[in-house]
Length: 618
Image 1 (cartoon, helix red, strand yellow):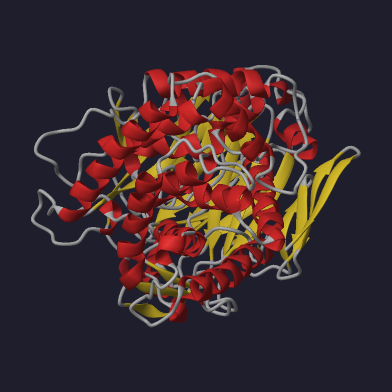
Image 2 (cartoon, one colour):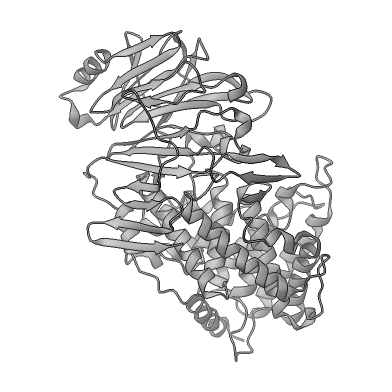
C-alpha cells in the first residue's frame, strides 16, 4: 500500500489519542516539530548501527526506534509498510539479543539495561501509533511482528509485574529510583495493555496468578493515584535532574496519549501542565536556573532538565539540545501541547519585574531503603526549593530541613545543586560544588540559605553528609572576573560578587574553579541587576560595605536590594534563618509564586497571570 495512505491512518490515530483539547500556544510549533522529526530521521541518537557481537551497553536499538518513531509521525516516509515492518523487526531482534547477554562488567543484572528503561516506552509508542483504528484493517506491522513485540513485553512482565506493587495507597513506596520506578510502572501498564488487546494472549497468566485484565485495572488505578499525589505534594523527588527528568516525563506523555481511562489522561495532562509551568517560571533563555537534585558534576556545567524541548515548545534555546537525548522523541511525537497560560510564563517580557518562586518538595525517608525500595515520609521534613527570577539572572537553592544524611532518601539528596544562572549561554553558571569521594556522587553535601539575590552555602560534614570531598566555586562559561579585598567580582548579564568567608582560595582559571583553602568555609554569592547600580564599581562598593559576620561558626550576610540578613548557624541541626527568623521548610503551601500557586495536599493549582489563568486539579 502507498505510504501516504498508511500515514493518513496514522495521523487520524494521532488526532484521536486523547479526549483533551490542546491549546495551540504559537503558530510555528508544527514547523519546529517537522524540523525536529527530519533531524531525528537523518541523525538519530544514539547511532542505529549496532556493534558485533551484541553487548548490553550498545544502545543502537534506541537509535533504531527513535528513527522509526520519527518516520511514523511524518506524512512522508518509506515507500511501503513492508519496509517499516522489516526495520522494526531489526530493532526487535537486537532488543531480544541485548536483553539476554551479560554486561561487559560481568554483572548478571543491571536495571539500566532492562526493558523498562526507555526501551519499553519507545516500543509501546510504536505499537500504539501504528495500530489500525477501529473498523480499519490497514496496519504498518504484520500480525507476526505485533505478536513478536507483545511477546517481549509478556516475557518481561510475567515476573516483573505484581499486583501487590500496584497498590494505589503505596505510590510513595518507590522501586529503584523515581525515574526507574515510574518507567517500570509504565512498562507494566503497557504490557498489560498490549496483552489484554491481543487475542493470542487471552489465557496469559502472570507469575503471581493474575491476568492481563486484572493487571491493567490495577496499574490504571495506581497510576492515577501516583499522578494525583505528585500534584498535591510538590511534584518530583528528583526535582529538575538534568539526567533523569527525561526518563520520568516520557512515561506521563504515554499515559496522556494512550491511556484508555479518561481520568488517567486528564491527570497526565495536569501533571505535564504543572511540570512545564514550574519549568517555565524558573527558566532564563530556555535554560533552567532553579535548584536541582541528582545533578551529576559534568552535567551541572551546561545541561538542564528536558533540554531541547524548550526549543520545540517555545522556540527557546537550540534544536541540537533536543536531538542528543533519545527520550525526547516521545514528546516530539506526542499530541500534548503547551497551553497559552504556560507559554505566556515562558515567553514573559524580557523586562519583567523580579519575582520569587517557592516549592515544597518531599525527600525524607519514612524508613531505610530495603530491597531496592524507598519509602517517603509525607509528614516529616521537606526541601524548600526557592528561586529568585530576574530578566538578567536566576538564583536557586534547595533549602533543606536540618537533618542528618541518613534521614534523607538518596534520590532526594544525591548531587544536589544550588547556584546562579546568568542570561546568555547555558554554561554561564556560578555555583559551589563538592567533589565526591570514591565515586561520582555526594549526598546532602551542602546546606544553603537564600533570600532574593543573596546566597550563603557551605559543605556539610560529619553525619549530615556522605561522600563529601573538596569544595570549589565554579565560574562557568569563561566568565571573566576581578579580585578586590577578598571578593571576586563579575560584570556580565548581571553583576556578581562571591567569596569564601574565611580561608581564601586557589584560582584555577583553566577550569574556572576557585578551590577553597578551607573546605568547610561558607561561601557568599550575591547577584544584582546592572540597572540597580550606576556602574560596576558602585556595585562593588555596595557589596564591600555589607555586613558579613562570622563568629563561633555562625555566619550572617546582609544581602543587597532588600534581601535582609541570611544566616547559617554553627550547628547544622539548627534551622537556617532570615532576619533572625527560621525559614519555613514545611509550609502550608506546595507552590507559591506570581505564576503557580496551590496549597499542600489540596490538589487545586492555579497557573498563569495577567488574565491567562489555568486551574488544574489532582
